[in-house]
Image (cartoon, rainbow, N blue to C red):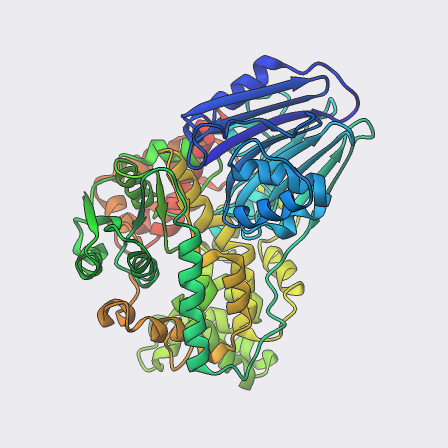
Length: 632
């Protein structure tokens, strides 16, 4: 895997700052420690850091076509590049390397901007076409690989794999985007296309950017989206189950291509166990697997991972994370650049660190919950939808809002109504209810936390607009498909894939995600809802299909996730740090929050009156971001 950077003069052919590009490239050294390359010509500067995976001897970048009219910098892997190479050779193209990078160059020559429709992989790349005076940037369909860009006041376009490289340019202002701040405190991350800064954007998944030098135009357009409108409600479970396993096996097989040591993460959950099972059936050698064991029993899944490892005879390695492993707090701000409040970034960082000691490439099980509807919140959402369908909104809103205020004295209530969040979620419409179920902080809590000045700056904007915008584009009326679609556009690329990319790249480790092969994703989108969520069981078809391959306890035990004991930390070893950072640190001085509201949150949590661990972690990570990135 690699890191890419570049600068384009949109207005002419100025000589660009070589020292700036070199600094931008060095800032991403961790993404590609094996080699680095740069290219300069009037108006264009490109940089690349390489982690060598395929074609170790001749895959250096920037890479040119034969007449040096087209050059590329590229981060990713194309899993179908060998077939594309044959097709391009038949069309008359000549290759001098064995890399997938050169396939992209010739695909651009042959098909232009439509070349992205031919690619199956994870990628972010930039092509400079000297004859057309065009810079073409593309990001893969699901957003596995990142791409940031910025247009500077003096007419330049900057791009990079990570935000930290773009911030090397002093013309890029570090002014906070107020809407992004609101979205972060609602979701725990900043969803595409915003970044935390007004001056920088993310290229969304499945999008391309075309910049025309001289004219100065920059256009962004979508080339792919998951489509739930083609749902086949008559699908046969037995036939679909067999096809699912074949498609999963094919997706894993495609990702075993490597010239360096390869392995897999094995968490003890369904998805990683499925990937390891498929790998074992395709490999003649034992699979290398890595797991994290937690000192806190409530968070430890290592024994389930060991069962799968033993069944398939893997070379299994386990690293232990103790309940007081919070030494990464200061590291995370630099790794993630933007505020990022998924606390499972800590064990993810550790398992990537463990894996890199033995392999350069690791397969993961990420994406299974989004693709096959495995999250518990999908089940809760469908329960809420049943209530919404029988109680008119005019009655439902006032009634369940009131019931939510009198909770927790509702010991008489049915189980489905015993959670305050559920009551308040039912009071809302479907999209607002789903946001309420996944948000880190409620709208009401954020309004109490924000200062009057910041609320005026927001001018009524709320994070729900992100979900509503995606819901309008979902092309489905099915309630389960709708929330899956929202997750594909927000949580998956904004949280899950960011978490894994930055944690793995911090250790120069490439992670491949077979469950997010776009052909498998689209096939699963066409499955009827009852094959995903049935009788309260998420990922129903996925689990049934895996019964011959994965232990029953692993398939059907309650989902645990990659959690850390935040509540205990904030009342114990991190007690004083929370108070110092949130009540006296950069966050307290930012002017964004009411000091008395922050203090109340801290006091209620540390006294045991309430569990505010999620919002406190979000605030703590925001404080670290302010100290590391805004006020370095």
